[in-house]
Length: 334
Image 1: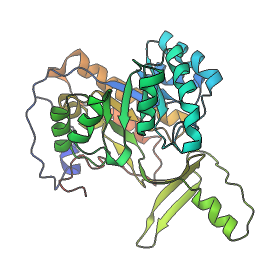
Image 2: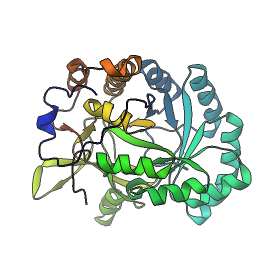
Image 3: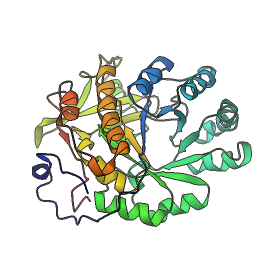
Image 4: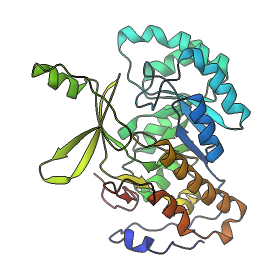
């Protein structure tokens, strides 16, 4: 079917997951990344992204930057001119006093020609039905998107894609795709969110101590970290925005070597998480995945992994953060 890259077998050691033989008939999936600005979206598309996720903190969590309502129409139009798709992030959980914002925003997105919205709160779906019928919806329930029944439930209510949990292994991804009868999206690169609180925990703690403090971010390799006593060498980055506190994984997912398996499993969208990474790093990641996807698309039967793709990423990888397969080859994930 395809060559296993040198060294990959060692990194999969201990996995007992059965390999399903899937015919090489799958289409090349889209390559998706979040962007903080129009200029960044253009750079990411030039580097190989075929879809861009944008938004603002009023409606979406963990955006790398604000694309405001005033900017949105121009950004969507520019993304389309470059031949890519523009999705808008509405994945936060809304409070009662925030519900009034949704109808006008949805109408704006529809008028701007957004290709889809990403949602997790049923309030968004109910408002789409009333104020923006026909708008494409992708369901994203974060860590709870773990089974085909839940995905199909939202599929019957209008969602055309499910963003599956990062904790699923390869066999579970294949099984969910076959049973859900809808598009699926997985994260293929970057850090992952492992905890979220609506409260700004770090800021609140400092205020509790009576310390006046402002959290300042100094780039991709500096910032706030959580360190467990049992694992002092592992640093969990803490990301705070208008939606609260997000604790991120100490290592980075890198599924570059597993692309053939993911494509053959029928995965439709491959997401690169850009948070707390430099722009040059994200561009290098996109270029490597683009080269691999293009080579697969040109002739799946002759696909061979090029170690240079991974080496180009490793040159810019933070040495304190390992690249790994996440849960992809783990039999027990809970």
